[in-house]
Length: 347
Image 1 (tube, one colour):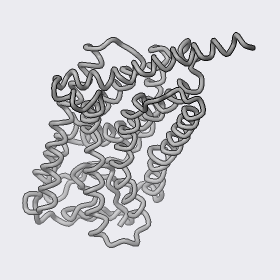
Image 2 (cartoon, one colour; image 1 turned 180 degrees about the vertical axis):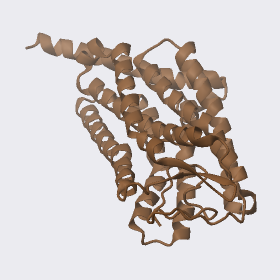
Image 3 (cartoon, one colour; image 1 turned 90 degrees about the horizontal axis):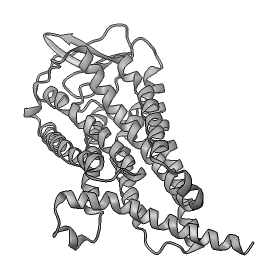
Image 4 (cartoon, rainbow, N blue to C red; image 1 turned 90 degrees about the vertical axis):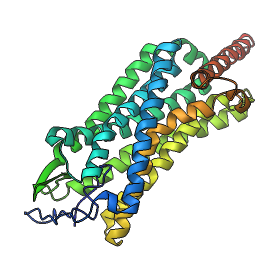
């Protein structure tokens, strides 16, 4: 079997209701005999996806409103606004897959089959690329504070965001090419069809792991290592506030996406039992989905002192979390500039 879960959140490529054989010229189906409501794990994951969808739409909607309208525009709010937009679009597509999970029948046509899969990978790539850009931004602020104060602008940040989205869209194109709707015995399934190319499945899976997980992880680790060493050497930062929200966002992303990529690689190896891979892909996919609603939660609980959170509104919590990062970096830039200025007078 050479089927692959293309981040379809109802597992139609890899569940026990539909079996697709792409190693032969003919696609063979086994008629579904059960629905999601008859399987405990499937029903549980379906409920979790509904909760994720509702919380993701609400939470990211609030972040978009606060960062886009309620706060003064800055480089930091531009980063977080783009992340929230990516997660909001992702959550807006979840109802299609939730409906598919309930009915076990894809009723939305070929365009939506391709589009929903494209959007989901667009979210994955755009989120991790933005996290890499933000990590590099933090690194530049720490290493070259004077240059950052003079050249770190909203316009340049917007250009980087647009480039990140363009690259993410390009890397998500395979979802448009290989996603297909197949119908058998009156039941439609939105699946991956790699029958036209023998090595497409393996190449796409590996390329997504490398470009959407491994390389970004290495770049982020390098940036944070440089930041930590610099701060320890200069002893200019007595608090980790400028970086704690970003650290939480990055850790959350990798913890949410690690199970998915792990089981994708295991599935390529083909040594594990099919049922184990099926269950692992279901759980891994749900973890990946959860990342889109966790970001607003982090904005709320990673703001100012936790006790103060209970005395303020939800909107104020998110605004404080987003604004705190920018205010602390601004103070760091000002302090670094003054230190560099004093140093230059002695040369």
